[in-house]
Amino acid sequence: MIPGGKKRVKRINKFSLKTLKFDKQKLIPTIIQDYKTNEILMLAYMNVTSLKRTIKSGKTCFWSRSRKEYWIKGRTSGNYQYVKSIAYDCDMDTLLIKVRQVGVACHTGNRSCFYRKIE
Image (cartoon, rainbow, N blue to C red; front, side, top):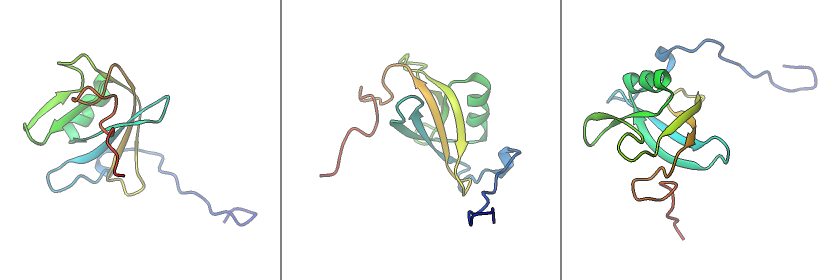
């Protein structure tokens, strides 16, 4: 306890890919968020290789579960996502990547994949 009754926050200082918890398909859900507006743009999946490619290139790279191949967001559309920061949640099983989005994030032409609402 910190004086004043506040709990001390445990911080993890060293990051290793081994600390992340990938699912049975060796994937981790990845939320993509605009770094300026905090708008959620999309959700995709990464494996260790696509995460390493993202870190190295500075552009988001995902694993396509349907096509079974890697894809760099924007390679065909020009709507690249330039990585500003990468974080992981407290359970170490989800990534949050803040990006500078060029153009739209959704393949439908919408800025965000979350353009529909349940009323």
